[in-house]
Image (cartoon, rainbow over all chains, first blue to last red; front, side, top):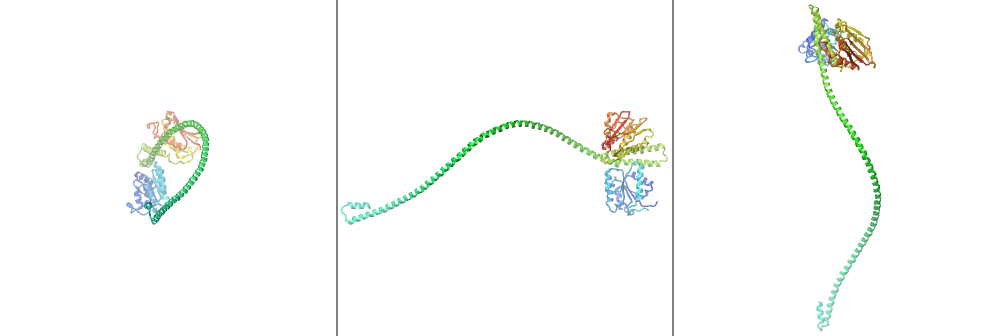
Length: 151
Length: 382
């Protein structure tokens, strides 16, 4: 494995969910592709290369996995900012959330989300979901120009 | 002077000259007299002239008066005519009065009649007013009921909003720890090289409990969502749904030797996910309440009733229920068993009823304590 720059930004405040998600990525050799931030504000700092992330390598992630319910800036607000910024709006964003509430679905799709995945309670299902998400967006899908490239 | 001249004549012999002079004097005097007389006469004549003018004026006046009298005679004649005319009119009006009196009597008669009519109308009016009063009372009652309904509706809307907020929170927050339990149990099972079979079983139990709770949460959420979510009506093969569900119970029931008698079920137009929830509830109930039955039998079948509805039933030979509580069965959070006997949330049959009602169907049940239960639902034939 090379020291590749992470191509997936995982925005998730719950450490258990982070660990379980990372376990699924690890099992599929995708762990190196994932960079984790723990709230919406940090996600925006990362994307705009400011604050702690002002020195990070240039380029947009090939995928953002975004939780909805988070402290400070929630996932829907992060999504809204990303999709209304011409420099960021081409980044594929997939909501990865506990909620299958219709209002969340409607709101995120109205902001232009690229996918919406409900975290299943059953771990095996969850595992499969994360695996397929990672494989599709980070490996199979051609990321938009300006994304961090694959080594 | 006159006295002097008479004295001169009486006194004896006077010369003629003196006499003449006296006479001349007298003549002078009488001439003066004559002049005075002429003056008087003139004055008299003037007076006479004046009185003649006066007479003429009087005559003119008299003529004028006569003319006036003439006029007034004419006037009198005319007045007589007018009077006659008035008298005629008065005569006429007397006739008229007679006629008017007759008319008045007729009118009075009519008024008498109309008074009676009015009395009858008053009675009718009172009756109508009474009815209106009754209506008013009735209307007030209806208004009162409306007010109560509006209040109840406001309460219900508040409750509904709270329920939505509640289910949103459940959806977001309650699932996460369950997912963590199943996730970490799974990870632990992979790492647990030293765990014996029993230990592994415990982990399975934990995992299954978490999954069951996940399902319950989903059921609760789907129940609360029943009123809001749009239905997707499609042709659905009920046998596919049922066999799927029965298979999902295999693990749980493989030591129990349940005899499943599943008939050929129809293909109907319904919301697949919702009908799945119906069968999950009915079948899981059958599995649960036959737990203490040594040879459990669960039957699932269907038929058409007289009104051509499709009736589906799920029948078991389990614990059954006291028929006098039948109406409680389908209530929200209503349970006829304690948690120690049979666990449960009391939401399952309420969900069934809600879903079937949304499909314009009915739900009912038959049962007897210790002799099993049969749950029915009907759906309009499509």
